[in-house]
Image (cartoon, rainbow, N blue to C red; front, side, top):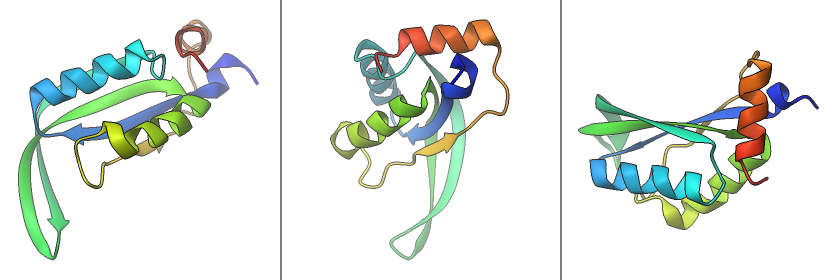
Length: 109
């Protein structure tokens, strides 16, 4: 498997900036992610417990490996502040070789 084919991008959301920064730092420090981008100012509309809700949130774009994605899913069971954390795993069809290599080397998996 080439480094590029081992890269995964995960999406999650969090409602507080401090929690978003803490989660991003923890993922990188633990070697679960090579990089996490925090995107402020998103407005989410979703169904929760039978009602339509809205919330201001931060989108976290997490760059990791396929195995790192599995480990992050386990980590989210206790390490994410939401009862049902969003975890969407994207499998990029193409990643630059040098960037893919950096991601693989940065993630302790």
